[in-house]
Length: 403
Ligand SMILES: NC(=O)c1ccc[n+]([C@@H]2O[C@H](COP(=O)([O-])OP(=O)(O)OC[C@H]3O[C@@H](n4cnc5c(N)ncnc54)[C@H](O)[C@@H]3O)[C@@H](O)[C@H]2O)c1
Ligand SMILES: [Zn+2]
Image (cartoon, rainbow, N blue to C red; front, side, top):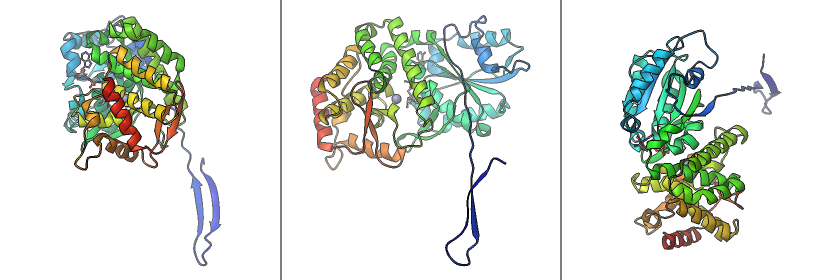
């Protein structure tokens, strides 16, 4: 027996029964490949086949493919390529049906009906806990598909094939999924590590520059709190990024993905049980801005504004040299990212800045005490547990002058 009796004692009160407490200890290890490749569906590229089988080579793996409509629009031949890949590797894998194509972007997270459509396809395809769900799409699509896969049979194997910069460098390599509910971002979701993540750089070729920059915003975020030399290299590459230099962009996205992976694996809190969430630097404001702008602002653009705001706040609070805060703002702007949106200055009925409600929502999402991560100095971080609203308002006013 792996149970340990940690206490066996009578209650202090007279006549009460003796109490024994067993400390249950469950260790679950998750190992999954994260691959960077090109031409993923070229029949000669065996990475997808290997990621699906993961050593179980003696049987045919049944797969349901879920496909983001925006990806299909950009790559209309994709279903044919997928079919021919599966035909070539028919001994190892089998499609349960044609890909299920659903809306991409935030729309898919705004209602549970898309998750239900996915669950229905998993059921109709008899996908079991040894079959696989392959989700191809942007971060929003993968979030919804991840939730469906995590719920069905209490979790079926999910292969993520992220197709946006942000999904390849951040959301697609992590362990979270979610949809929005009752006007709150990511209110319904689970922690569920994927079976494999396959980043194909070719998918990024169709992205307009703003969607590439979404990933760069997350890279500046993680560099600012974890890696000063990476921060400097993004700064040096900023003019090339703005000109869509793909080799510079891909280098940064890959480093960003590795930093996220490293944090999840080594922070000691992959399922965010503690109050701190360093990778969410700038996100209290970003999530609120997304909602206030009715998702006109993409997640990445909202993150850019959120990290600029919190960098100024860190400087005015004495945690970050002002020069470094200005450098962060200047790197974002040189890349072509925003550091201000009018929603930052919007007031509610009581004349309070509406964005500040994001602090309470962020605290409620994490539970416990409010904990915000700030760069202090660049490349490392500190945590604060309260925010001076007047000082935050000054930072917003400063960003408004900068826009
Ligand atoms: N789970 C996490 O840990 C995590 C982390 C960060 C962000 N997110 C979430 O990710 C979402 C943002 O994801 P995103 O930035 O990838 O954008 P997105 O998923 O919203 O996609 C944006 C648009 O691009 C389209 N698209 C996708 N791939 C394309 C391609 N290759 N070519 C052309 N169009 C393509 C989509 O159809 C959509 O219309 C947000 O909902 C955010 O909350 C989740
Ligand atoms: Zn983010």
